[in-house]
Image (cartoon, rainbow over all chains, first blue to last red; front, side, top):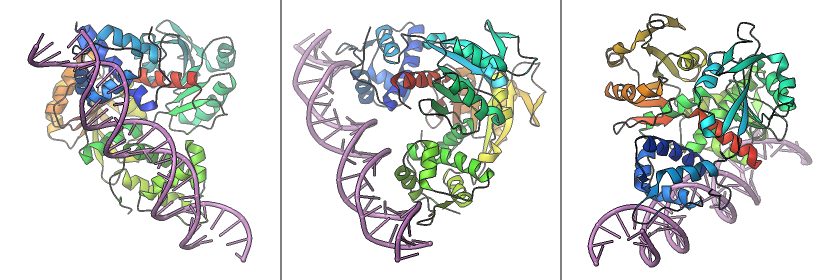
Length: 212
Length: 212
DNA sequence: TAGATTGTTAATCGATTAACAATC
DNA sequence: TAGATTGTTAATCGATTAACAATC
C-alpha cells in the first residue's frame, strides 16, 4: 500500500485523479502497462509532468518499460485517500441532487452516500439506489448519529445559506455547494463553490482564446 | 467598457469569476462600494491577491475608498468575455442534462442555450425553458445551421465518445464532458472533463488534511 | 546489446505575497 | 489633515519543464 512522501499540492492532486480515470479505462481495455508519454497524451500534458507527479507517490515503475496500470492505479487511490471511506449526504433531491445520487460512482472512489434529504412530500419516502429520502427536518438527528463528514448542497438558492448553517452545526466538515448563493460558514468547515455557469464560461473563454 | 491589459492566466480567471458572483450578491444587498479586503474575506484569499487580480483589468478603484461594485462587476464581465454571446447546446436531457438546462443562469453570464438533444421518445418534443428537445438524429443538421460553439455532454457513458465525435465533426469547438468516459477528440476541439466523483473526492481529501 | 523509459536533480517559469508610495 | 485603501513594483515562493544518468 503506497504512502505519500509528503502531502501533495492541489494541482498534482487534481491530475492524479484524472490519471486514475485514464488508467481505469486502460485497464478495462485490457492494457497492463502504460508509459508516462501515454498518460501525457491522454491528459494533454507532458511526460515530464506525469513522471514528476508519480514521483510524489511511493510507487515506481520500471525504467525502459513503463508503469503497471493496476499497481499505479492502486497507489493513486491510496494517495487520494480512498483507503478509508468518506461518508456523504446529499441535501436537496430535485433533478440535480437526484442525478448526482443516481449516477456518481461514489463507492468506486472511496466514498459512500449514506443519506438523502428533501422537503418535498412527493420525494420524501422514495428511494434512490436503496437510500431513502428523509425529510429535511430529520437532518440534525440523522447527521448526529452518522459518520457523515461531507454534504452536497443541491437545494434552491433561497434555502442554501440556512441549510448550510444547519449542516455545519450538525458536524459536517465539508460542503460542496451547487447553488448560486455564496455561503458564509464557521471556521473549520470547508466549502467548494461549484458554479456550473462559471465552468461553461471558462470553457467558452478558452475556446475564444484558442487555448486547448 | 474595460479591456484587458493582456490575456489573463487561468487561476486569475477563475478567481475573477468568483469575485463576480460575490459582487452580484453584494449589489443585490444594496452595497455600492466593496474593498479588496471584503472580497478577500468572502473568497478566502488575501486583499493583496484581490488587488493583483483586479490590476489585470483596465478598471481602477479609488484609493482610500474601494471599488464601485457595479463598475467592477462590469469590468469582470467584459474581461470574462461576456460581451459577445456564446451559443450552447446540451446533449442528453436525462436528470442531469435537464437540471443544467433548467437551472443554470446562462444568459446572465453571456451565454445562450440554443438547443437540446436526446434519444428518448418520452423526452423528445418536450420543452425546457422554451427550448424544444430535438431527437439526437437532428444533431448534425441543427448544429450546422446554428452558431453553437460549446456543448454540454450529459449522455450515458456508453454513448459519450460517439456523440462527442459527432459534435466535433459538426463544428463544436468546446465540449464540457459530464460523463465518466475520457474523450478523444480531434485537434482544435477543447474538452473539459467534469468528474463529479473527483470533486467530492478532492473535498474529502482537503477535509481530512485539515485544509480550508 | 541497443532502445526505451524511468527516477530525480537542477533550471526555468509563473503565480503569490509583501511592501509602500500615491491618493482619495 | 489623518486614516484608509488603492495601484504597482519587487521579492518570494511553488510549480513546471528540461536534462540526463540509471536501468530494464
